[in-house]
Image (cartoon, rainbow, N blue to C red):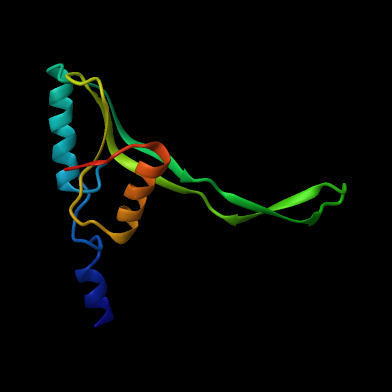
Amino acid sequence: MDKFYNHAFQGRNKYGNKRVGSHASKKEHYRAGELRMMQRAGLISDLREQVSYLLIPAQYGECGKDFKNRPTRVLLERPCSYVADFVYTDKATGQTVVEDTKGVRTKEYIIKRKLMLHVHGIRIKEV
């Protein structure tokens, strides 16, 4: 039974999407193609993929001294970042657009979307 179960679900994503090339889903892959065409047509510029934004920096604490009597720091919490699928400039408005292709809005994504607005003042465009 375990052998069948592992084989049947091998390569499947939690939400059922399938990777296409370097993209996380077919939807993201097709959107990348659309945006590349828009860039060639001169509608957008400076198209970038997988752009990372720091939302909460790493948290460190002191935990004593090392052998040279210097304070040692220990990582308490790792940083929290949001990785946008696409970032580009809309030539009609001159605005920078941060875009995410969404199939499922997870709780984690919703929190990161709110933090993007709060920390960076950026509203994510969902496609």
